[in-house]
Image (tube, rainbow over all chains, first blue to last red; front, side, top):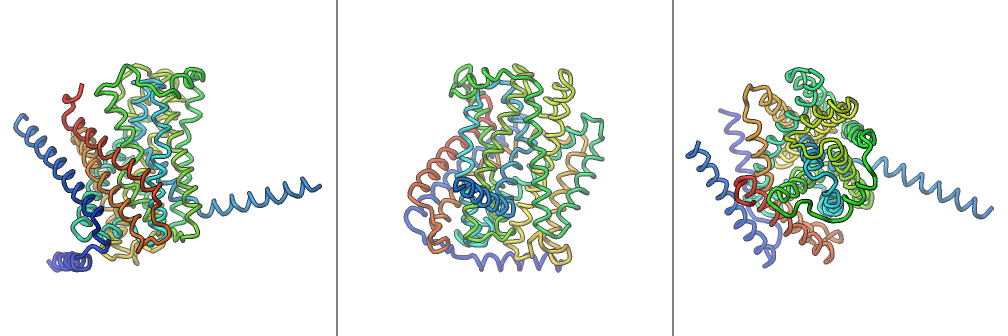
Length: 58
Length: 422
């Protein structure tokens, strides 16, 4: 339990240390990250769809 | 006399440069050759068996692609003295950092399982039971990393890299027609027309040449080795040599299976080795030894990539230059991933084919993300200063990234829905 609490505390510390991105969020950076989000949503969506297909069709 | 003195000084200069390179060589060549892992060997063996020499030209195109991508990690590591995981956390914040770290952890572990599949299959040809292979590999890898020095690890890894060249004499043993190799292999062509299956093979070859863990591994290795900004030219040369060697080895595997197993459907490199045993015992043995070596080298590097990344983020001591007492979490992560991956292979009827499929799909999700972060980080003048990407480097890098994003998305779709493209 103590180790688990320690791990949670460590993750919280990491989250606060890296709360704000250091790179300046220019238009190009924002656009790249937005495109990346869309790409990941699309691909993860496809993976979930495939998983559902696998489960339902056996 | 003047000519001889000039020659003497030139030779002395060349010898000094070669000695300096031998000191600085390592991360680039190790990561590139390790990329010819068990999965890679299977892909190249299957490519040769399916398409003969016809796709050699495509493999050659991958030399500059691999070089341009990996070279960026050399600059980023040498200038910032940070591994790739830490650079992403610092540059883009915790959300993208955790995403990259968890994705890396999953894909590394699954790839590690496939390395064990390759190693056990390779030694099974010599009638070694899988459990002995798994135990022997874990003990061997413990000996390699517990020496407590990055230098020892790197030189041993280079020795395994040299063993990867075993496919070159194997290709000479099958007596391929040099004329056929040159005529069919060097002129760009799509044998049998461009169809879904050919696309699948092209993508598999790209996927085995550039993998997400390679970015994390090389940058962390550059930092652990202690490379400085002045060492960047040597790091570049090391990476170029590595990308050349990895593709040359791939070409020779294609030549072996293209000559002997043309038209045979190959599902694994172990199957190719077993088939080759029937025609030429030595070539089959070479392929099996090469497969084991590839799996071992891949396993060493992949498990380290994860441990380095976790160490960087959690603030644990994370260098091979530290003893186990100084960096317990670093070594614990290393052995945990290694032992659990090894145990999976020993589970009877484990879904190893499904795991291999997952490796491909999850690697697809991380590769474009890792490449986008890499390009953006190399444009952060505040962090990399004069080593920032030039306009030409951005154009080349951007072109590679966009191509890989498009192609790997299509690849991911074809892996998940194989009947979609015919």
